[in-house]
Image (tube, rainbow, N blue to C red):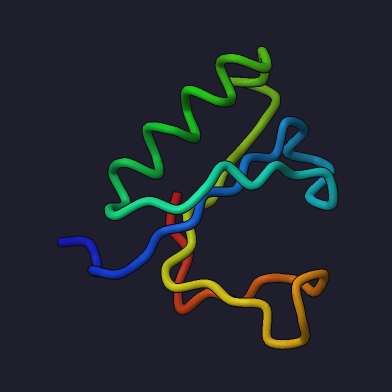
Length: 75
């Protein structure tokens, strides 16, 4: 069972470079986030070279430009 809350998706077109990422939005469920992430990786031709994360209830405690902190992350 997946945790309820707000899931935020992050796609890494190059899994070896986690600093280069794309925020793909906020989703109601983990399943929606995962599906959107896989679709995005497919669109940028990075299914095998890329990676993704879905974070639960993420926020930026130091401001909008700071890294996100999530209660948990799933793949």
